[in-house]
Image (cartoon, rainbow, N blue to C red; front, side):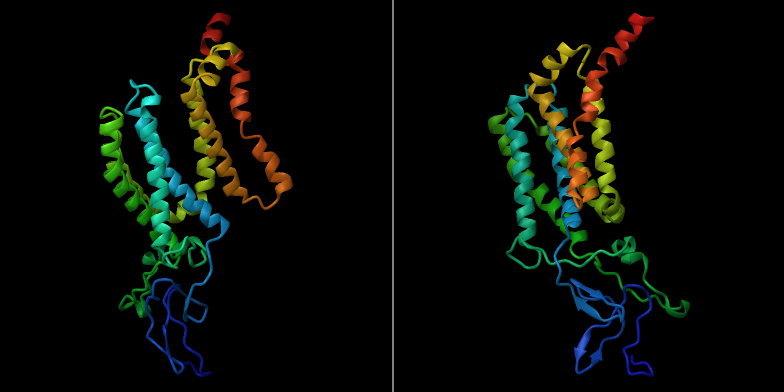
Length: 306
């Protein structure tokens, strides 16, 4: 394990390391314990940092993804019911997500605290150590699979598990007692999309980590336009009727603005407030542009011109 200079020999591969055993001795090359990362000399060292601002934005995105899907299916599967009758289900989904987040934070190191001990993320391959197990001399594979990005990989899955469990405990009772059994289909939908989200995290977490801010900005913009196009806005007076005075449409519109702003904050990390705050002020601009051009772009007006 020592080279000619008396230094510990580096392990093959990017993520194999040696565990210090004391008295200058080290273990054979292998996977570091959970919460450890190999350094440049392949020595497993405990991670003692906390998640960066960008890391917290990524975790928030994964939590919001679940919450937004809950709200979408509650609304989509109950189109014939009034918005007010569905408020208990929407509030329940929000509280379930908050409680799941708190329980998840309490169960990661340091235990019982809302703080999180984490390992730094340096590159995309850190998320996929299982694909980079070395094969010295092209013979036997040395398995060094570990959570290099501890705990960003598993904490999201723990959150989804808690979110699903709390929903199954709370939502059916709430739906039965306060909403006349409405919301049952949204519960079934959650039983499908939560496992899908877990698989998504397991397979695409690294890509999502680096591209989620672009994804949020693009999707919030596209879905916002789709929602406005379905509101039958034929004139400026109809904007007041279908947007300003309609609580459901106004809430959805503000929600799109929030997600758009969230994506911009994640992307810029507000490192230069003099530039980034004015950009945030432009979040409602696509909506205003859509409304101001109704007189020219609505299909009914185009037919009149013909």
